[in-house]
Amino acid sequence: MELQIADSLLIQNYINGDERALETLIKRHNQRLSSFIYSKVNDREITEDIFQDTFIKVIRTLKKGKYNEEGKFLPWVMRIAHNLIIDHFRKNRRMPYFEASNTFDIFSVVHDEKLNIEKQIIKDQIDEDLVLLIEELPVDQRDVLVMRMYKDMSFKEISENTGVSINTALGRMRYALINLRKIIDEHNIVLTN
Image 1 (tube, rainbow, N blue to C red):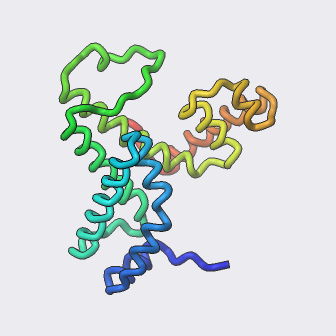
Image 2: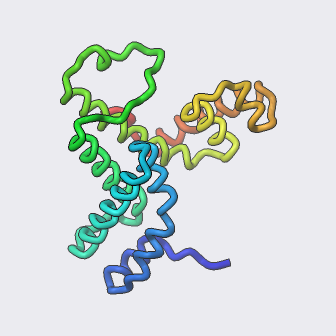
């Protein structure tokens, strides 16, 4: 089995002139980053553009010697992509559409564009943080949580998809939320602005 070189070492190698190190980094994070961008813009071409712009910014930052994320390469790259997504929507004067929830949302009746953009930025940042935290959950809990929260599946559908009883699916969801809360506390993350 091939040993994976740490991101931080690849970054160092790239800064020291090894162009292939950056290629390895891009290949390593291509799927996660592309999926993240696509989930926000829902367009393959725009995803590709933002992906490339993200790595242009990464290269510029690395070449200027301004990278100091201490081994947190992926969250840093995701933040760059996230900001470029916001720029894209600002330029196009529209923010991504999000499903309405059952809870009353004051922003749906207040049509102040600045307020909506600010709310969107905060929501995107929370979504981004949550995606990274959800990755830390055990697979069975993560799957149920993703099916319920992101794919809007019923517990009956989750049960059919995973081959477990509805009660087991409910239990996994409960444990996923408990563990997510623990992870949030351990990381001292505040999910509001």
